[in-house]
Length: 175
Image 1 (cartoon, rainbow, N blue to C red):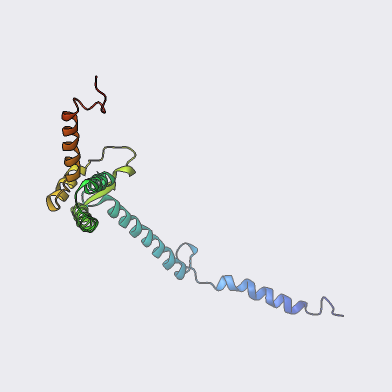
Image 2: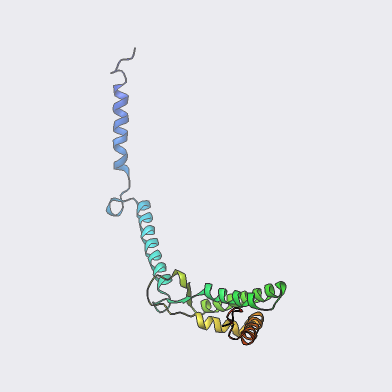
């Protein structure tokens, strides 16, 4: 069995050694070591730099972002409806649609290069954001011809001929 007081002198030496360590620590500014001071100054510098970068990214050049809205779904939907009504076969329609989509993409990319942030119309909840849909549509159709609704003209002519021959087109019912 071990006596509790047998190693008492070694325990006293260990506790005096641990108590001496904090006294040997080098003190810098405000009770911080030089290493802690360097880490603190680096953290403050990174915080200031991050705030500056965030401010410049959000503010832009003149302090105001130039947001515009675009009804992209409407432009594409109108084109696809016109393409469906045209007399083009499937391969021609696919090629023309690919050309249209490329022209639309170039036009929207041009807006972005001009410093505008393009927001899809459906994403706008409120506020006064200029709508550039008509100018984009005009720019795209200046590059790509609008599909001609050949079938619609034929159907309209047939309906007019039917109505003229049928006395007003009452479905074959004579009065």
